[in-house]
Image 1 (cartoon, rainbow, N blue to C red):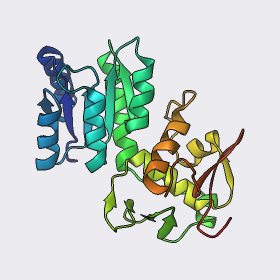
Image 2 (image 1 turned 180 degrees about the vertical axis):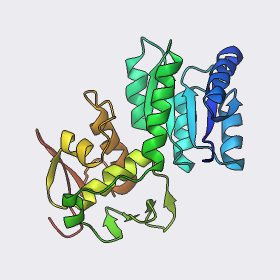
Image 3 (image 1 turned 180 degrees about the horizontal axis):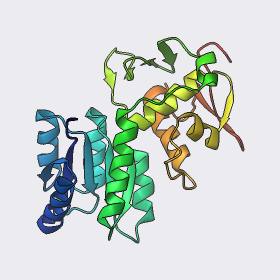
Image 4 (image 1 turned 30 degrees about the horizontal axis):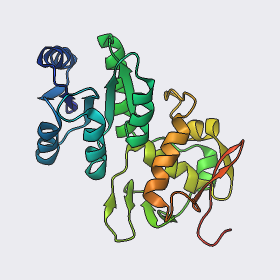
Amino acid sequence: MEPKHHIAVVDDEPDLRSSVADYLQLQGYMVSQAGGGPQLRAMLASEPIDLVLLDLRMPDEDGLTVLRGVREHFGVPVIMVTAMGDPIDRIVGLEVGADDYVVKPFEFRELLARIRTVLRRASVPPVPTAADAAEQPAERTRIGCCTLDLSARRLFGPDGKDVPLTAMEFDLLRVLVSHPNRVLSRDQLLDLAHHDSWEPFDRSVDIRVARLRKKVERDPAKPEAIRTVRGTGYMFVPDGSG
């Protein structure tokens, strides 16, 4: 039997938290519950967590603050839970580092579908296409001030320390470094990253690229490694190429 995925459900409402946890346990997942940021951080530091379901509207420490803290130290996938009338929360959440979102009130079946999708793309490396194989970069590729290790799926900062990277962020970097000095449209990035299950509303790709620039660029306000080609898309420029 395959090992169960371990999901952390973070919400300040005990009844809702318990209902979600009960449902996910019935679907075969291991579930831990946290009433807020401190409990979640203690959990992440002490045991393997495969996915975090994080409510953004919590009174003591809001979910966006919790998400920022998680992203500084962990690459665990995060699905944020937002209110119906708060599209700005979804945009900011993606900017901070969420992998997906679900809107309250949600159906359990929708939540389950999103969880399965995020877990699948986090745990299964994409199958390279023939075009990918033809342009396979070195196992270690310099990108901005960082080094991307493709085989280990890790990003190292200039000091040699790990830079937390989500599965989505790794796949975008992989595609970019596999196509140096080539302009890729947003649709091409999604297609080559094998993430056609993403829901690319107007700014989703741009938001994720902005997140990556904060990690790899020497000056994110003046990107040199991941450049914008206005009206078209993005291009990875290796050091010394232009």
